[in-house]
Length: 173
Image 1 (cartoon, one colour):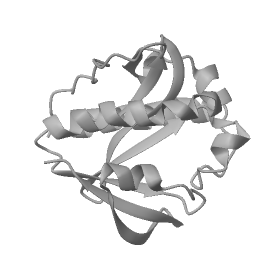
Image 2 (tube, one colour):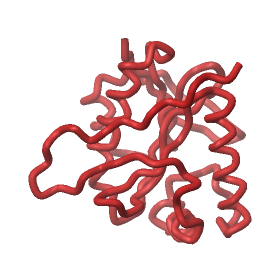
Image 3 (cartoon, rainbow, N blue to C red):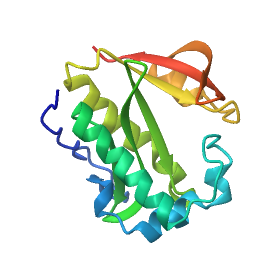
Image 4 (cartoon, one colour):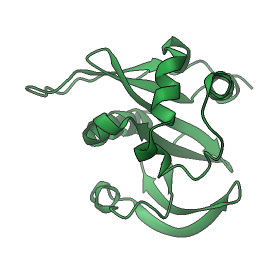
């Protein structure tokens, strides 16, 4: 059953000197930006499911797959913009019946993760479909303090698409 498309969250909190964060749909992003982002060794190091070079054809398949989630579930991944410039992608995707939150920022935007995650989680708290969200992180992610500060609880290790991940759960209701 197709649900109405969810509106992206707005950046409503003041951030003196910081960029304005907005969310857009992935088809609005130049595929060359996606290719450059997903080819950065700093990003690849934490994406165990990315096993092939990310080229223009893969970018097109990636965007189509993420848009299919919007059509199927009424929710999916966004592109993140800072002052109108692409800085990454992420959002919510159903994984084994649970809403999983993912965030993949460009190497130069790693410091924006907290603000972007806060906006996305604010959205999740207003969406009745998400009484909780999960996070799947590769074991290469050693600094997990931000998840703990959010109140996310460790759920152990899980295998997803043949790769091991650390799973966390955060109640949003």
